[in-house]
View 1 (tube, chains in turn orange, brown):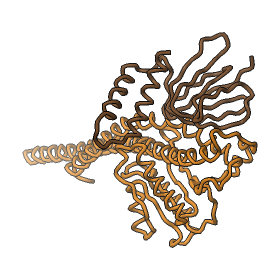
View 2: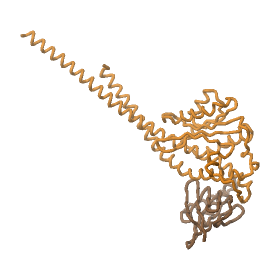
View 3: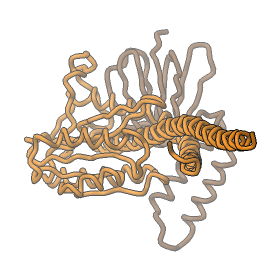
View 4: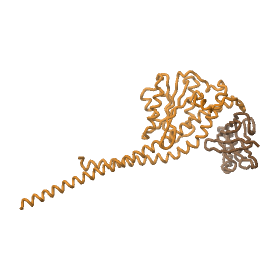
Length: 292
Length: 132
């Protein structure tokens, strides 16, 4: 049986950990509220821009903007969006696992990674992947400028033929207890087959004002920036939600452990008292016998 | 009169305007109006005023700083960088913005003139629409 002092010590340390997890849960909850609001506000706009582009893709002349070029995917880029910190259950590992899966069929030399968030960066850099871009430590002051600079780097490489295809991998906020890992082809802009099958694509002609060229040249970059921005907002909200849930669970587990340990402690204490009593009673008995 | 569905979507808000008869938008090449059964089109919009007409109702106005309009027979979507309904515009703030932009433009120092001018245009537009 473990001795009383040991158990007391363990209860103390579990209580301390619980204090930390409870505080982290509360911080995450506070951050989540803002992150979730920002994400939900921006969602309809991002989805509609995407919708309009989807409608237009079959109608537009791809030679108008070089971002619309579709090439044989020889050099493939991956934008991997994780968090800077851990302690958020499967949030980072799910992304890293999915990214690793998609990376598998390609040779390491043909792939380039842009890591958003420190966790993904550390993982892939230490395993010898080509990390050509890193965006870390900005989540706290996340703004549209971050999306723009990431997109700038990608489009630059795409236009220079240093990348032929770019995947975007991030956590989407489904609800407070669920995140969904999304893999999205960021470039080239092509229609996904399921959209065509669902009949969401309408292959009709469009009238463009002032001109098709002007619309395409302003809409395409805007679309890319907005999609990246939405991915960052989603990931940010999902991270806070994941951490809140994880720390909530940890706090509960700590409570359970404390009550188990307290029970054990009381049992041990009682056993010790009983033993002492037995000693005293035994001693007294012995004295009685000796006198008698 | 036949109507169509109008929705105004900005990065921060969605205005579902429901069934309307007519909408007038500030296109890059000038104002244009859309009625029901308009041919499928996409317009680029600039700073200006959006006028919405419903049957038997006073027209409604929005101030916008530009974006896109997607028109399909029964539906019009306005994807705008910003949109404010005339009765929601903060006149004081618009006036302040005008003053700020004018001050900046009157300085002889190196400033981003295009940026200052476009923010002046946006503020003037907001004020104009607010006074509708």
